[in-house]
Image (tube, rainbow, N blue to C red; front, side):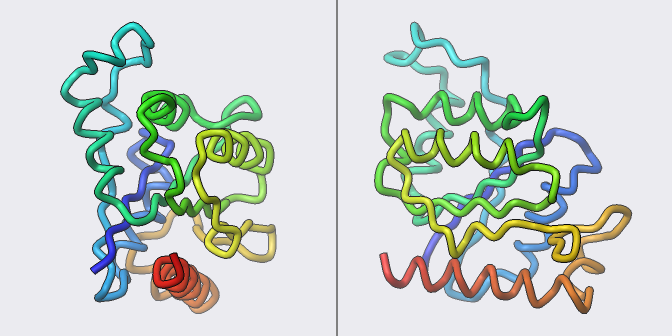
Length: 179
């Protein structure tokens, strides 16, 4: 059984990124354990002085990623960059190495997040994560992965979106089986 950890870069209750992760959880393949981590939104602000004696929640975050076979990140774009939630969560991993050689999937859920996506790719690459392009599709105006004002079930039942979600799981499964 493979383990995938997903994180959303948004803390909003109505976040489309979080909706996407919840929909993906509903259709996860039987050979993949998919967990959405709530820890990133609760982490203290990164402080290098605390790295050697990291707060317990930081240790839990690091352990969660150590146990994962693949890391799935979805993030909105704020001021042309990744969200503070994502940046802070990744900053806590810089010197501890949880991303080193770990497959990372970063689906771009909105056609308006290209700048943040580029920023996130740079961060993950610098940290040694193995970015999987096949597991990191980019949304376009014609090819979306989420829609506003829709539930998780409606998303996975949507005739245009459901096949994209299924294909993403297939690509993730292929990546896991080949790594």
